[in-house]
Image (cartoon, rainbow, N blue to C red; front, top):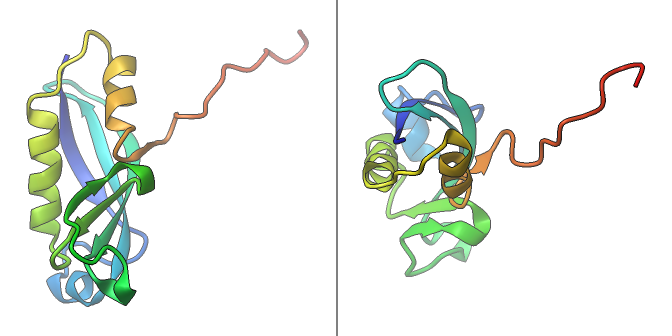
Length: 122
């Protein structure tokens, strides 16, 4: 099974507005990723930061798995999309759960901490 990026959203800026994106030092970007060629998607939260903003990440570019962040030279949604597409391109696992677990290493999966609960009345 493979995954594909189906959409991107941000509560911090309109991602369709290059000026708003470019003016930000950091953005929370919600990646909507699901099984390739199939219906459905789940959210993965990724922080996108400009390198050197406030002295942070000087000299570092690319994914920062510890911070579930992507560090770029400049804020550019097309570049974010390329990074994500490149990451997903060669990723294959037998199940969605396994695939989401690997994607969750770079972006926080919405169901990462989910544990099935007990039914009411049990």
